[in-house]
Length: 131
Image (cartoon, rainbow, N blue to C red; front, top):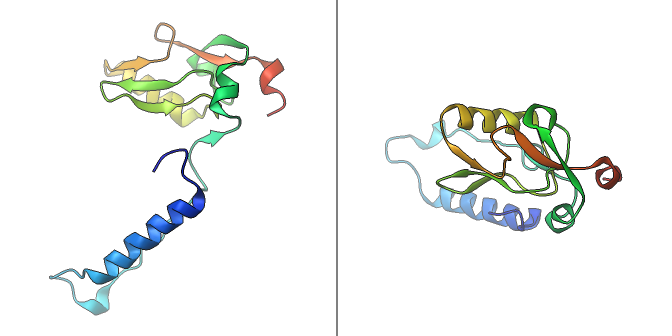
């Protein structure tokens, strides 16, 4: 699953997994004690407010990571060695993402996309005001 999958594609994947689950029953668990697992889809997580392309080519400024919450990120912020994105261009930065980045830095991990260890590039008000 990626940012480019649609909600209907993800629902198809979930329905396929549920169908497979019905075909395979646990050996050590009786059939009558089956529990239902429910999760909310698409309610939480990153908030993309503009396309990564538009965000990448918009004007920006550098701000301290603690002041970036609620602003729109211009560059990809990812941890290394895996290269897993934490924030992508066009995404509204959340407090949880900032805490994740600070935690990684405190543990000595490399975080690509920051200027130094504390500055993050965000869109200026003129470009992010309308989104």
